[in-house]
Image (cartoon, one colour):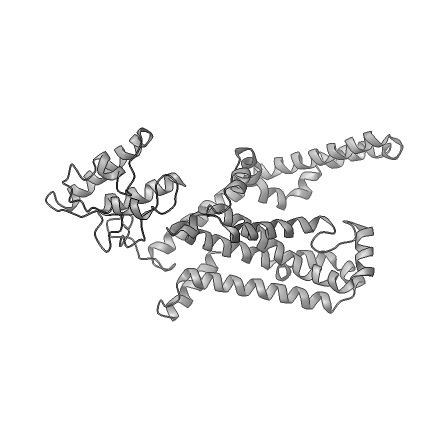
Length: 385
């Protein structure tokens, strides 16, 4: 991923900034998604079903046949981050289009239950045999396109949830009970066959000799116990991998991105000489988001909050001025946030000169925001998220 962003930054530089880094990343990822889908279709339609079944592991494992899911995730991450930074209604509200995309995405996910993405006979031998006889061309399209479409569907669900356009789905998928499994999911995927040797295989080996002669209900119970042991074994080795490999790797990645950003290799300006983080270069945002709901204020609210203020060093961060910046008064629950904003604003006023006066308004343009106000606006937005 860092290499992809470096390539996108280089392309953006070649175009003299006419193409942003984000657009270059999305374009490159979209190209990878299309190329992977075309490669899969070409491979499937040039092979017979017998050859495909014999080379199923090759088709399943090779990166050129699996790149589409990664590319879809990159696109969702970039577009989701952009939409969360936008303040229009499309970025924070759902609607018919969002509902339609959500239904289609879940339909694609549900379509994998029958024979999976690659229609391997070991997953459903009877279903695959019927599929081949009845709809051979459709089956080849299924094998060629369903995995890329599945990646796009999952990425779409994630983006809709992350941008607030599918709040009910986000509430279910964001439940705390999923977080331990979510954190370990990638390590579990990598080490599933290692974890299977710890608990699941010994249990089935011990029970296997009598499995064919037991009652049906006991056989079903044994199968579900085996699944539970499979998951527990994978979780045990995944935890070790997460602590020793995955988490340190993510920290190294964050450090690398920070270093590249400081030197302007990711399309961002280098840090200031004093080592402090760069402030936002302007406040030329569209109307300020409602701090409670994340939606733009109405016309009446925007008009009510549009009165410019010329604060003094002590009145600039008063609770009333900060809380009513977006045209809405703040409740008692925001007292801690307001106190923090007070301290930030005082520090900025002292640094920028006791006599300097700055106008604040919900739609202020250019340099009309102090550093404290900018930090306050974005810190409250982050707190709301």
